Length: 317
Image (tube, rainbow, N blue to C red; front, side, top):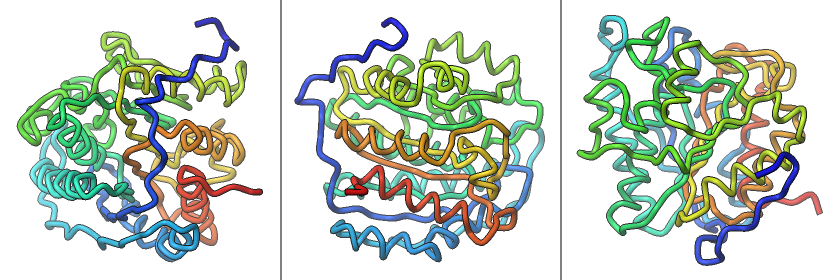
């Protein structure tokens, strides 16, 4: 596909209207990171009115509350808090799977990005049981494609995409009893601007689609998202959307776990979610890495709530 060329819409059978019923699950976990605070993300989203605003948009919303967390004991490099993360991700997977079986949209609020291991496991199980295909749009400043062998920090929140593709800590890779959870050919990274060298090699080895901030700058957000939607939805029956708030420029979203300058603008972030809604492909959603301790007047959580509403069809007209 040539730069600037708009891809064809995937076949109609693969497009679904966004569900008008949703379950919100909070995962107040920061065990996958080395900085405290993102465990308060779910509380910040609720204080920003997530449940009430979803309901005001006509979405039948149930708040499932927060998953209870075991006390962390800590582990060595590459396996920091592994038993606790494994247990929590198992609960997330069960909840997401149950929500999708009930015909509702799971909205998972974190917490650090390692919770995606559970979200993707639950969503993938749902599709696998029905012999359906699932794509993944990963909107993030980082690739999250490290493994214990390549990670400079050993923090698991830098590994969830690699784990879900079948590479990394065996206990996490095998969660729910099957691997991989997602297909590289139907996976797109959007907004990337901070990769480790070995992480680049992992991404190249899998051949996933990558759209950096340079691509966004050169081509525009609409072109990038049109293509990301195309490659993830083509041949699929639904798409999981994982949105890390650090993809947004820290001037706009200061309260994030790992801030990186030069991110998406307010409008670019909204446009991404609006186009996902317009395509009718989203079957599960998570928003992660909001850190209220580093925020200003809950600005980042309020933006996160707005972005969720955009993904679910809120319009300015």
